[in-house]
Image (tube, rainbow, N blue to C red):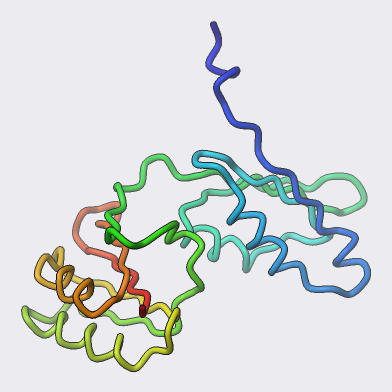
Length: 173
């Protein structure tokens, strides 16, 4: 039996009519991403090569393949990254891939404990409910996790591809 039968077909989203009428399809694209099943990809049809979307989708764990199709239109296949480090999430965090983009970015890789934890907690308190911050650390912040949970915040994190930096998203509760 072939593995093809167990693969999930990508969801197809054609935003060309929206673009041709002068509309902005970003919200529709993000809604489509939220509706994807685990392991499912997204095939996007657009009137241009959507270069800015590549970074957004990469931050949500997707690789992309691009090809020009008829009449100068573009087809982009976004597929879930399979070689990424497993993501740990707080017990109350549902689908971190659907969280909004971070409003704050912190590079704390050059700081020793407990300074990264102190800074993350301080910035988290400044956020509006539902807003997200992204932080890059030199080690896994084991003592930070229970503090975030105690304060009602959600988190998701993992090591980068090299294993040398820990990435964490914190969503204010």
